[in-house]
Image (cartoon, rainbow, N blue to C red; front, side, top):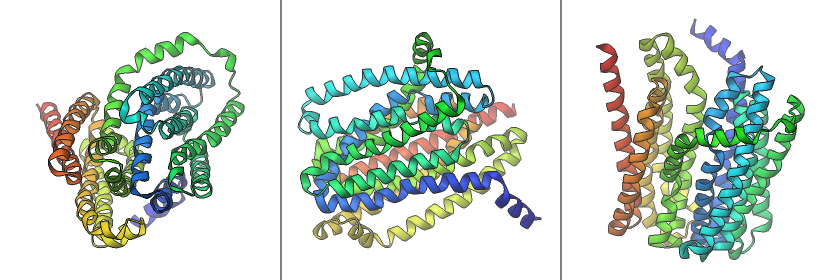
Length: 423
């Protein structure tokens, strides 16, 4: 019976969708393995630290430009797949809103870069990094996810990373060329995204003249609270390298960025697993809460075991990993202790992502938003304090403490909700 189920799954569209989607996402895991060692070799840890600040700054701006398109926008496209008028209206309204936000936040970001001393000293690199924001504005993946068009998502992702890697390897040849790394990341996203938009307009025969300015303005008003929560979540993910750079310098930020890149590989994998398995968990829990919970426990248990084994392998081969990333031989001993401390994070994130599935499946997004905002504010203050007291290890200890707080908070909320339903 189990063999029949496995055989049926392998032949199913869902399996092929996962294979195609997973292949595209694997490029996201591979690109840092190629880029980071090369950048450290050419530009040093300090150059990598500066790039990390520009990258994080651009991603924080991206959240405002995305403005909920990857949450509500994707859901609305998914629920109206065969309603041509509706998906046309959503396509034009969301891109209209994103364009207004792009213009505003690019100007605001340029003003911040030009006036804040911390940013002004590296303004050329930061301004070039904003090309990533333009690329993300154009990126039609939010629409393609709603249509479950995993082939085009994969095509855009592979082309994007291919152009990015080629640009860096061909044009970043000396230490001062670090300013172009994020620029090529943005260019790599702009080109395939434009191709994707043209493809969607032609395929669905969208009429651009039907765009309504008032609808885009209303969308901006309606999505503000959701976007604000996403901004806090983005700050939790991307602000740390800026804080490390500000208090400890670009060299230490570069060291932090090396470890963060490896942790990000696990985060990307966990996010991919989350996106793919989450809808099925919702369906199973909706049918039968007890059986749905058992399904959640089984699939996440297997996934967590995989993560644990991979972390263990990396933990016991720390010096080899750091040598591969071209870390200076004199720094490997010190950085190894930070690295091992940082490897606690994938273990905790495996739990965080798993429990977050239940939070959303049980319709607890109200509590999720508040936990995220509270955790982010506490995290930023705690990280600054521990950085001053303990140096780079303080950054990882702060993250570990907040991840534990988030996990406990999720369990408390879920237990409270379960108690209310049982009354």
